Length: 75
Image 1 (tube, helix red, strand yellow):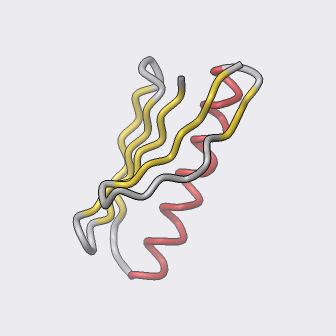
Image 2 (cartoon, one colour):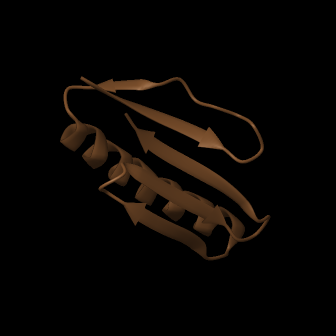
Image 3 (tube, helix red, strand yellow):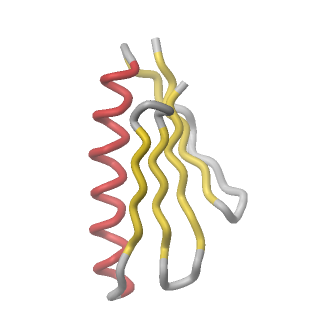
């Protein structure tokens, strides 16, 4: 079992998502992060920075319109 956590630089945190494996958690995080980048970039007409570190199980989104971040972490 693996756990996917989503946290934000402004202190919010979503409920953890249980996944059957780290690979499944990575696939889910990847899909969610790309969808979030699409939605936020469209809503705010801006670029969204994405950083991927599969080895450490981390994806970071940088919201360029307000300089905030979203973190996807797999454990």
